[in-house]
Amino acid sequence: MPATSRTATATRLGAIDIGTNSIRLAVAEVDPDGRYRVLDEEREMTRLGHGLFARGRLLNEPMERSLAALAKMYTIAKGFEVAELRVVATSAVREAGNGRAFCQEVRRRCGLRVDVISAEEEAQLALRSALHHFDLAGRSVAVVDIGGGSVEVTLTAGSVVDEVLTLPLGAVRLTERYGTDGTLSPKRWRKLRRAIDRALDEKLRKPPFHPEIMIGSGGTFTNLAAMAQFDREGSARSVQGYPISRAEVVHLLHRLRATPLAERRETPGLNPRRADIIVAGAAAVSRLAKRLGTQQILVNSGGLRDGLLLAMIEERFPSEARKSAGPISRLESARAFARQCRSSERHCEHVAQLATQLFDGLAERFGVPADARELLEAAALLHDIGYVINHAKHHKHAYHLILNGDLQGFTQRELEIVACVARYHRKAFPKKRHTAFARLERVDRRLVRALAGMLRVADGLDRTHTQRITAVTCGTHRGFVELTLQARTDPRVEIWDAERKSGLFQRAFDLEPRFVWVRGAERRPRLRLAAG
Image (cartoon, rainbow, N blue to C red; front, side):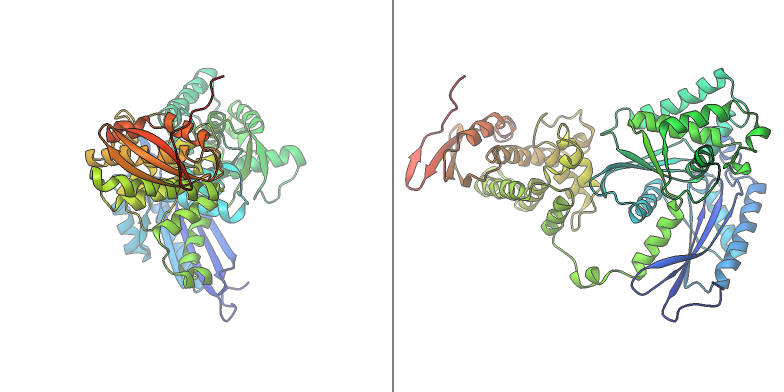
């Protein structure tokens, strides 16, 4: 489409990504309903980060190449009459001692304002792109963006973020530090591999789960896919969504590292200008996939720049549903997130009901602040969301999911409390050696113990997930608290489970819980399961 021709009601947007290795422009035309199509793309490999990792500064020659490329891209975007042109910079500019001065020079010479985004924002944009292009429902996924300076890893269950990591394993950084641009001897290869593994040990010693697939963006992934495509099919086409296995990556890696640079540039599917950094990038992919236990990789050719365009579109064209719905309450947000994670709604709602009944009977007597009631209710609604990843450590997964779940209406402090209460609804008691718990203020640590103690008992009181116990009331006595249970049928399994989960409750309130079952007007003492 010519730059001057457009649909009458369409809006044009432009996005520029200033990376360590390349600068990329995308121009898109967006319809009023938010649908878009890319009109033009431009990429220039300026190697802005060349020499940065040894000297800590951007060098003059790479900066001049980058400034010239940005001036051209600005001219292209103006030709398309974009309504907005957003420019972001990543690892190289973020880390450079003169990164701010470079941004000021871009503003002076090109008229462009540069936003230097964090590693977490990079990861969010890569994830946004992956969610747009791939159906992740019901799948555990690692979304990985490999740049020249860093690697961003987002571990997700469907569209729900569990953990975000940034690793100093960019292809340019590794190449300059370990000399991987030429043929690698066995000694140099071992040195590179150990360096990557050390970085993984520091940030990802024990992955929270093993993703079914890795979705990879960045030039390393697109070039690996193109080379694999040539190997399989003898020709090149679009690599968007192209599948490659870890075994193929390892095969390509060993072939490339044994090939002199001049010959490597002739490899079918490999961009000759990337030949010097492809070994380092492929090594990072191989070792990361091994650490995650992931065998299958899907390539996303969009990545960060695509995610930036999508973010701009969402800001300008929010869906009619989002326009009309208005802000939702904190608990509605928690319920929506629990449904997104496919939690058992009946069980979690019932546990929340029982937990808040315990709170109502105990909070004033023991000085628990009234505003903590909603935090307990939210934690109860969300306590089982970790099942979306796996059962064994679902309480730990719940912690990360809550912190990364974009829950509305909670402060960061409140989110950390809710996440900790959900995390401690089973297994280990809160301990100061647990980093997340130790990070809390002393008063909040006491609050987490109290709320998690109530949640454990409430969870036990629906052990069979049949909502047999309809209500619980509390009566405090010297040395114990009597919990009177209304139940339609014999709740001895629920009482058994609540008793065995009551240790944290006893520690928090210094009282033993004693359970009494009431059916209608009939009052029964606590029941025990028969031995054997």
